[in-house]
Amino acid sequence: MGQPFPRYIQLLGICCLTFLTLVESGRLSAQDRNPTENTRLRVMVSSDFPGFPVTNSDPDDVQSMVRFLLYANEFDIEGLIASAGTFGMVAEKKNILVVLDEYDKVDERLRKHDSKYPTADALRAVTCEGRGNNHGIKIQFGCDKQPVTDIIGEGMDSEASNAIITAADKPDPRPIYIGVWGGPREVAQAIWRVKKTRSEEETAAFIGKLRVFLIACQDASHTWLMKEFPDLFIVESRTTYQGMFRVDDQQWVKENIIQGHGPLCAIYPPAAMSGPGVIEGDSPAFLYLVSANRGINDPEDPTQPSWGGQYVRQGSTRHFVDGLGGSSISKWKTDFQREFAQRADWCVDQ
Picture (tube, rainbow, N blue to C red):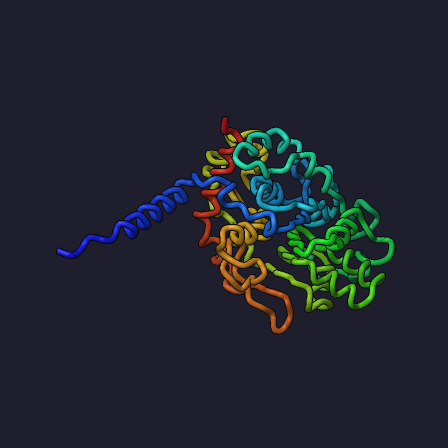
């Protein structure tokens, strides 16, 4: 018969098992998972957000926004941008404000789990509007459908492009992660303005503060950014984002999110253009930051596995493009769906 394990090893094993049990059961609090004040990621979301009811765009942006707001405690959110995209090509921040009205009804309950959940008013204060076809320009959906000078340039600044410049100019050493769910016109216009009005060194410093995650290719500014700015940090998810498609069906969505989980979750659409259930093609733009907060990946290295996918570096540029494809997202679905359902429960916890 062998010698018994030393007492300290027995205790270590018990602690490890207890920790793993807590993680698996979802009982670790948001506070336990949160980054420190010095490591919180600065985030802006640029969404081609539809109006309600959704008739001229893709409901998946609403799906992604509901999930994103349930993670609002983990980031310093510096902008919610209404941009142009999909079919309507309109940019209206009032559509985002409608969702924030629903968030306003649950944020106090969320703060019982983590005091870092921002108030709805704090998020309203950073909600801004880009330019779309409702602002006197004509944006065509898709890559290379028109000259980029049709949609960026003199006289085309917006509340949103100015907000991006303001955020990057803050005396804060942390970079800004901009998730672009629609067209990147607002990012492109901000860079165009800085390039026109500042020195090469100042422009390089500005570009060095940005981390841009592009979902698909939705307007001419996408190609312009990729071609003209090899030193701009870009994750280009042309197809990898599709790994979010149908990670769970309508029945799961109804039981775990929509029904009995408060007014914010109630607006989660049960289907999107690409089919029923969870679609959320835009969510990888922030899920790779969520997994970074859990120590799974370094957000500065998109070649690492993450909840938002795994990408390959494009030559000597700072661009990262599709690599392993959608499976690099869907393989994590058990983890990110479990957390999604848990946070939906927080919206109604007493």
